[in-house]
Length: 203
Image (cartoon, rainbow, N blue to C red; front, side):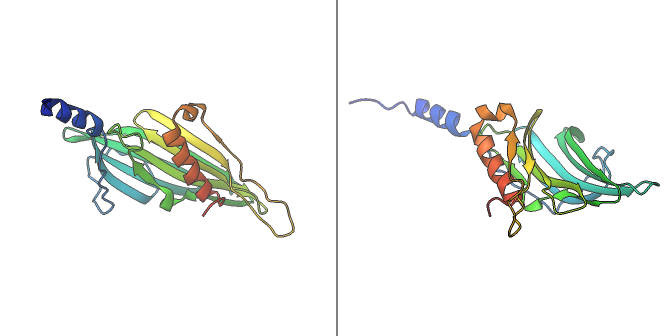
C-alpha cells in the first residue's frame, strides 16, 4: 500500500494557487490626504484595490483648457499610487493630450472598459485603461488606445475607430500592438478585445 505524502500535496497546491489574487475593488472611498499631488482635472473614475504588493489607488483624470489664441486642449491623465507603510507613493502615470484649433475636439475615457485584473495569475494586478482622442472638421476615425500597466511594465494597443457610413467604404478599424505583447498572449487577447469594443468593431 502506497503512502500519500500530504505535505507534498499541500506544497503543490500552494505553489499552484498562491499567486492568483481575488481583487476587491472599492470605487466609493475617500481619496487620502497623503496622496501625492501633481495631478489636475476632473476625476472621472477611481479604484482602490489590493494585490500581493499591497494597496493601490488608481485615478483617471480629464482636464480641459483653452489658450489665448483659441486653441483647445484636453489632457488625459491616469495615475496610480502604492501604499508603503503610512505613505502613498507614485507608482506610474499615463499622460496624453489632444490639442485643436478651429476644429472639433474630443478626448475621453471608455470608462466601462477600465479593467483591474490578474490575467497572468502572478499576484500583481494589471491596470488597463482605454481612451479616445480626435481633432477633426469632418466625420473621421478617432484615435483609440488601450494601455495596460503592471508595475513598471507598459503595454499598448493603438489604432483608429471604425466608421461606417451608408454608401461609403468603412474607415478605420485597424490597430497595432506593442511587439512585446506577441509573447504575452494572455494580455494581448484581452487588450485587443477591449480595444475592438471601444473602437466599435465588436459589441
